[in-house]
Figure 1 (tube, rainbow, N blue to C red):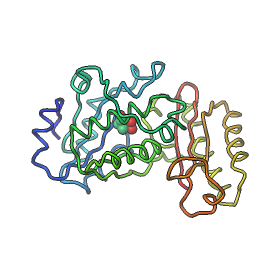
Figure 2 (cartoon, helix red, strand yellow; figure 1 turned 90 degrees about the horizontal axis):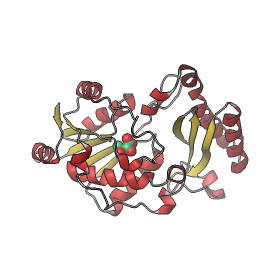
Figure 3 (cartoon, rainbow, N blue to C red; figure 1 turned 135 degrees about the horizontal axis):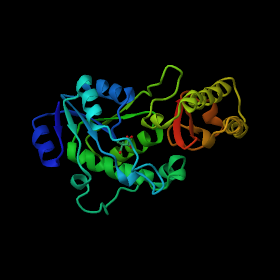
Figure 4 (tube, protein in one colour; figure 1 turned 90 degrees about the vertical axis):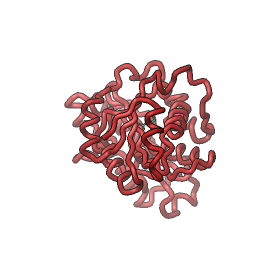
Length: 279
Ligand code: PAF
């Protein structure tokens, strides 16, 4: 695997390929990322990953400084997974001057759910992903479905800017008990790790109720919030939404096939976890 730190060397290395498949990450890689690499290998003629902890998508009180940076370990994992090229730019390389030109996704997609609780988050994500796509110039880009809203916003960004890139979703990878894999799971203490599965259990309970015909969405959401709060969590949201625009469903959506997704974000101790389940 070739490890590259500059945009110039990246371009030089990739220009001979016709169909780079690209997996952008912030490092601290787990099986979810490695599954995306495996998926990418079947989709392009060279597999490229990036590792860049993007300051723009962290709020001042969030974990930018403490976000785990594990480059050596990550390189070993990427190599074993068959990644061909790793682009790991420094901040000075990717942001040599303050990144004042930014990509602003529309409020109706980006200021709800994650964007409501983390204002500016999707501006940071869209801006860095646009820049990484410009550097790598892939034909395929893969993003995990665990970050459901991110995936949807990036899909729309690629479409609206007519970027010649196919966006591909990777299924959420889960631990044996059902907890969605995430770099932030590493922040959990042992008792918190045991408790953490309750987030996916709450989503499963909501999904089961919807499948059984529950139509009082507000009550369903409130029950789910109360049950996690009762266990000591601080939920931001547990909510039923339409898949295609993440807005609350109308009566027709509740009976349509493949129309809904339940999404959750909640804090356990100081760790904020997110998860989702398509219904
Ligand atoms: O999902 C992530 O790890 C990040 O948001 C991404 C897409 C790599 C942009 O920094």
